[in-house]
Amino acid sequence: MDLSIEHRTRYQYSDLVNYTIQQLRLTPGDGFGQRVKRWEIRVNGHLHRFQDTHGNATHTLVLDSPHDEINIIAAGEVETGLETAPQEQRLPLAVYLRNTDLTAADPELQKFTARYAGFLTDHSDLWLEDMMHAIVKRVPYAKGSTAVDTTAADAFGLGSGVCQDHAHIFIACCRHLGIPARYVSGYLFTQDGSLMESHAWADVYWPDAGWRSFDVSNGCRTNSVHVRLAVGLDYRDACPVSGMRVGGGMESMGVSVLVNQSGQMQQVQQQ
Image (cartoon, rainbow, N blue to C red; front, top):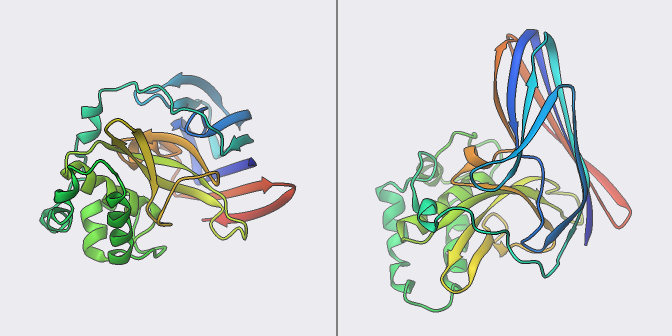
């Protein structure tokens, strides 16, 4: 499947910003069943590209003159559904057993996870699908119920969340069981355009099989409708845009994702 993607992010400020520095993880890579055919990032500032600790293609964006808005456009075409191997593992697997503030399992999550401990000796990873479905049943998808700094434990206790929360909860469970897991940011394409937006899921490392990807919110393994951008220990490592600024007053942000598949184009606005 060929997916054309245009991801626009616009920041507006009530006062002039004197200086902005941001990290952009908005560039997909080859591997995990996808191949980048073309890709570019257009911004009203200076870009410096590098590869971060997790192997993500990352750009540092710097605006060092007064400005009252920032416009970031990431666009290109990615072919999916291919038999391409995962990218080379850069870090020791033990790194992905490390708890973070967003993925730590509290006693309630530990109790939930304990029911799956007996499956650790299985040669198959199918039981992870059962755990995935149980998470969504316990924490139904609900927009607006959580924020980017909501922890896995808080979302689990609240009983509602979005894809980011589902990924964090799944990762917390896996790490508590001693299974390396990591957060993935990317895009999800649907035929009706209902979920054509930024998305998140989880990678799990299974012995003798390597990384396997689970889209917890949709209760499935990832496939040709997924395009991966970045990985990390949690959302903060893999989020598309993060940064700091000096000045600016109040900030507003608008995001839109445009996807074109087989000549059919639709658009979703996100605020």
